[in-house]
Image 1 (cartoon, helix red, strand yellow):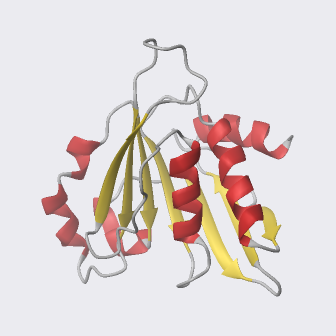
Image 2 (cartoon, rainbow, N blue to C red):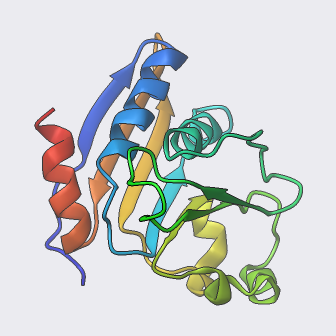
Length: 172
């Protein structure tokens, strides 16, 4: 359900470690989220989209190497939820897409994206505007920008369920 439009939250990171810490904090607020969860990552090249995505994927419990999906369009990860009761939690499916290299949104039709999205899926999309109508609307929108020093992040919760998580993020 679409939520009333709220203003963007603003964050500033003087260094990469601060961005990594924010991603870990964000991941901690996502447990128990009724999926699929859609996160759009916008910003120029080098502003922190992939760093944030990698950090979030690791913070969600994935232990392996997190690759950039720039050339393969998407990478799929399965993470065991952190702090879950052993044997009592379903793995989290994480799909990380980078649409920088696509020329037409219709290229997404062949990825079978809707088949990848279930209740335990988190979809991270870099360059989402290139996906057109083939992408689901976001629960969260993150806009990364250069700052001196570091990076700035403007973000907002776009759905009712995301706004419930947003409240706990802004009160920590």
